Length: 119
Image (tube, rainbow, N blue to C red; front, side, top):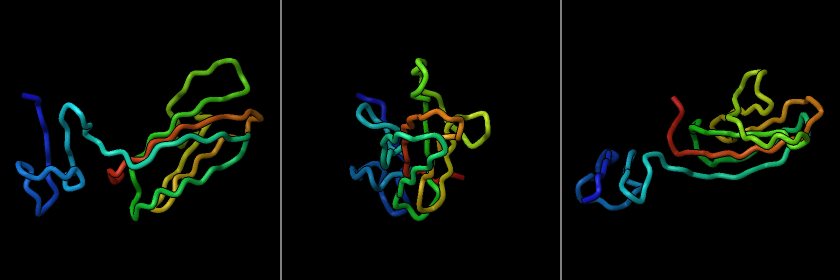
């Protein structure tokens, strides 16, 4: 028997309900603990900002990875909000904003938006 971990939302039975939308946490052999709402990628020129509407009425948890495309190194790195990151991001209750810092180099970013509310 597969190991299962489920935490149902109020009003739902974790033992009998099978609709994953009725759970705050749901994991088994085919599902993961965190629910992904959207993913995508964008290409950015130096200093450019891309806006991605997420359609949630709260600030969701997001992960953004970036890389410069004008150099031979093609490693992806986790992005943040501080100056040491080449790609910055900000998220509010309506949009994810991804900005390539203006250092004269173009870049790419991959983003993942999750249903979990950022605390």
